[in-house]
Length: 162
Image (cartoon, one colour):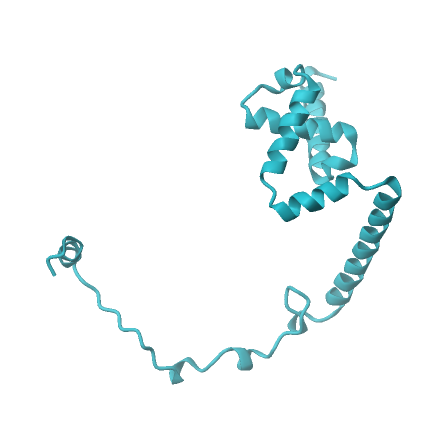
């Protein structure tokens, strides 16, 4: 293999890793989470990534979580606090419920995909016939009259002359 082939392989590997990591939830994996936090810190504080990795982890995490908390409404902050204080059993039960909800959503999407496009709108609701939704525009009498003026008249309007 040549230097070029090694370079292409390295770039390909990094691209695959970046795409798979960004598609996954950063909370799913400790390494992904730390890399996500380091990148956030680097972008937020204009610090090179290799420098962020050398900073005390506690300082980086404190900045990250305080910043995230600052942007939450009181209700969102309360919900986040409840999530953080969950017991392992409560967390497992929540994950199971979320998984069941996802399965239900997938079944609904499969049902929608099975219907002809004319019967379903993008949200999965039945669509009314176009004749009911679209009024006869000729029967409507507009209450708006539009008059175009020259640039000089517009300047006079702005200056309060007219």
